Length: 415
Ligand code: DWN
Image (tube, rainbow, N blue to C red; front, side, top):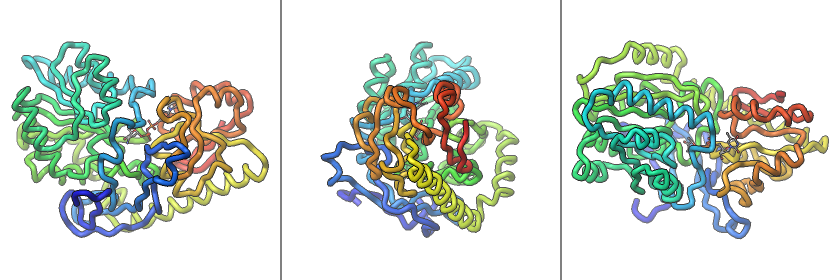
C-alpha cells in the first residue's frame, strides 16, 4: 500500500468480510480540494462507491484517498464557522465536565480531530488538562492561538502509547465528526483501549446511517467519510477490543448524527436506549441489502429531480447561486453534473475557499458579500444541515423575492 494514493478495500475495514459496492457515485475529486484554475490539470480523482458489509453491518466506501491528500496544512474546513455548532460543542463539553469529570482529581481529556479547538477550548477555559490531536496543521494553529494544547498528528496506537508515556491515561477521549474519517478502525480501537483509564469513557459522534437512509442525504458520502456508522456497526466494531457501547444519543447536527459512549467492558451499566436504538435500526432495515438497493434508486431519483429544476431555471434565465461550499456539495455537484452554467457561484464565509473553484465541478467560490450584493433568484442550499441558522439570518433574501432550492429530504423550492 505504501506510495499508493488511495486505500482500496474489497474487505470490510471493520471485520474483514468480503464487500461489494452496491452503487457508484462516479469519478469524484477530494471533497475539500478547492483549487485554482491553474491546478485543474493536476486534479486528483477516485471512484466513490459505497458498500455495506453483510456480516457486521458497516457502511463504508470501497476506495479512499490517502489521509495526507485530504488533511494537510491547507485544510479548508473550520468547525467554528457555524454559531449553532459553537453552541453544540459548548453543550457537549458541559455534559462531559458534569457527568464524567466531576469529582475526579486532575482529569485528563483527549480529543481526536480537535479542528480549531471548538470543543477543547471549554476545557482550557476551566483549566482542565487536555490534549487535541489535529492532523491539519492550519486548523490546529487556530486552536493553539486560543491556548488549546494541540499536536498535529494522526491518531493511532503508536500515538496513543506516546500520549500515555507523556501525560498518562485519559479520563475521557472525545471525537466529533472524526471517527468516521479514519479507515483503520481496529487501530483506533486499540489506541483508545490503551489510552483510556479503566474507568474512563470514549464518546464520539458522527453522521448517522439511519438519518442518511431516511433522508436520502447521499451527500454525506465523500472521501473523508470512509464510514457512515450505525449503532449496530459501532457496537460490533469496538466489542472485539474490549470496548462496550454503553449509551447512544441522537443529535440534530449535520443533518442527523448519533453520539456513542463506549467504556471498558463491564465498567459501566449499558443504558436501555442502546437496545431500543438497535430495534429501531432493525425495523428500518439497516441490516438488509434491499434497503441499500432502494437507497440507490432514491439517490438517482433525487439527482433527476434536482437537475430538472436546475435545467428549468437555466432555461428560464433565472440566476442560481450555491449557499455553502460544503464537502457534501462536492458529491452533489459531481454526481448530478451541476456546472457553472447551472450555478453561477457558491457563496461561502471561509476565506481559504474564496477565490477558488469547487472540486470537480469548478464552480467559483465567492465571499458571502457577493451573495448579499446582488441576490440571485434562487439559492441552492448546499449547507442544508445548517438550514435553521441560515434561513433565520437570510430573511432579507426571501423578502427580496429569493427562494431556496433544497434537496434533502426532497427536492423542493421553499421560502
Ligand atoms: O465531517 C465533516 C463535517 C463535520 O464538516 C468534515 N468531513 C467536513 C465538514 O463537512 P461540510 O463541509 O459538509 O460541513 P458544513 O458544516 O456543512 O460546512 C458548511 C460550509 O458552509 C462551510 O464552508 C461554512 C459555510 N457556511 C456559510 O457560508 N454560511 C456555513 C454557514 C452556517 C453560513 O451561514
